[in-house]
Image 1 (cartoon, rainbow, N blue to C red):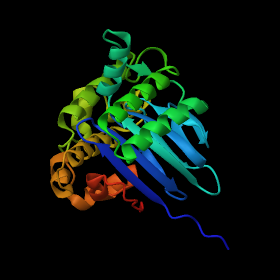
Image 2: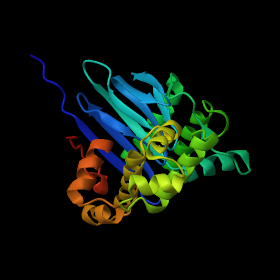
Image 3: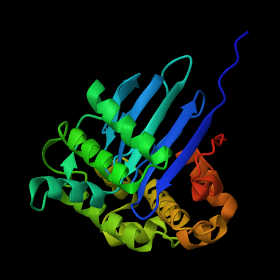
Length: 282
């Protein structure tokens, strides 16, 4: 009887750039709906994975490229009996903007990707080369050159116009905007639904519906995402998990560990080290 491959995830980081590489093999592990404050470009190396993004279910099979905009809510799970293996690149907005400005010789807007899955073998190879440069600790010049090639290659699949947040129209959109602003300002605090609805100028029910329609997440899920993002940035900056948990608004280190591992597939301590050592999800 054949055994199921062990589930593992690992991270690598380029110091001073905010650029990260992630590699994982999953069979049963499933991501909850979450988002990132960076662009996330990836390649499925083996098997297939499915996810809900921008209201549509998509599947990335072997060799396909995945493209997530900052703040794109998405989940993820195996779409093949044998699970899937994939690699991901997390590229901050400022790096994308710098590459495009350097290429154009002028300030450039950020790209918007409307298709989360692209079948482009040449682009997949370009992303893999950047991923390998990060994993292999190549010199900074090599990373810079491959980053430029990756961003230019990905931008060829972007839609016209700059990246933007979710569409916000009418009264419900205005309420969602106000609520989001309050959460972004006070996400570490214990903000209640009544206070959030009062700031938004609507009922709790209307706020929940309008917020989810605008951003693809419930207000509580978005608040947790903000806390996870803060913890992630603090861990990357060298802060210990216990201190990151307290600074990001989590009840304690165990609370951070539970949600961080569930959301990113790796414990906060392993992400803090980012040494490429494979770690199992829960």
